[in-house]
Length: 323
Length: 262
Image (tube, rainbow over all chains, first blue to last red):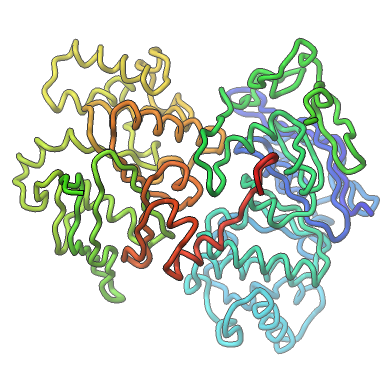
């Protein structure tokens, strides 16, 4: 059952250089209890999509947002800021790459972890503190009872990200949007954090929209994955399908340019650079870098079903399918 | 192997004083890199791999220990004698935005090592064109400034500058970490090609084990300032001995590509 349905989302920014087309018609669904990876290179619009869902874009200044973001039969894009404040934290939560800037440096971490539920549920000081300790323990902070009264600067990067995770999950949201939460961390810490996130997800059933540039992380964590390029979703599938039978030339090229353990044979980089968003295109955004481009690629490719769980936006996906 | 190693450090120590006690960023490291070898130095942030690279490059002075370059003790050389050796080893950095002067044109940046070596202007200009072509940049880039280039192009400029003096050795500190994978692959292939064409020796510093495995013949793993394991790339990645190396490898998220054996 769809928890969140993004329907033809467009985001444009007014910039001194002109109108920047950041998100160009994204359609995506997140079901209850699933982990969906949103993957793409920098500038492809994945973070802007996430911020549009949370209504964190500067809509009164430079951002123009259109389309629909349906959450429980209601369009989030039509909600007032007051309504959004109520929804954020309780229904939808978000965590970011840099945990230090997400935490208040002069507030004890226990108070930050439980700030949301404490206000909503009018918890007593003792109850709130106990709940905070519980959550810090859940996310794997050792000696949570002693650390609950400490300040963020006394925590390492990995531990801070755990605190942020506790803060986001303590409100028992139905959807957690995680924007590159492990990118700044060392691999050993990243592995621990992903493991913890997976366990918590299984226990709480919170759906996760996991944004990353790292295909390997997607392969390890997610159930489904959507690949973004130039503000569009070019392919989406279950993780098993996408990595075994990638259909879109961009997805394939991305895989071919990623070194994997044991790789000695030459990588095949993608020639050229992604479009800058300042020059809107009518056809397939990948056509000018694509080895398989044909004149038909001047027309926009629709997102077509390959299987019931695999969709791809490429005119030639059938011919290019592996035998 | 009785050939003189290109780089050899012995009991190299670098201590940074700190309020909370001294930090041994590089803790008695013995490292040998042979001519023509691509040596990968891997480890997590704070393990001392960048400091080790900067010590070899002469950007930091060691607290104790020696660094030999082609048999010469760099730590004992006079500043003038060290400068004479400089063209032989060059460095490229992760953050090309901060290592290229934003006010200078690319030709000024790339030719700087040549001008320092006293080459005439006309020769510099010709060489810059060759170098840009060599790293896959159009000649028109020469008149641009760093801010007008993409991240991948800027890293190519950094590589062109490092190649200007025809060095024997390049120390590369996380040169692809800030780049997207498609661009990262372009730069990795460029580094591979340059090595084959010029018989370069690399000290390649990276936290990304897949990248190290792709580019390097031998690998050293650093942890808390110490070199805990050194071996051929095959040995390190397939038969890691040290518990820390094993932990590091187990933590890497792996990706299987379609059509691969596994």
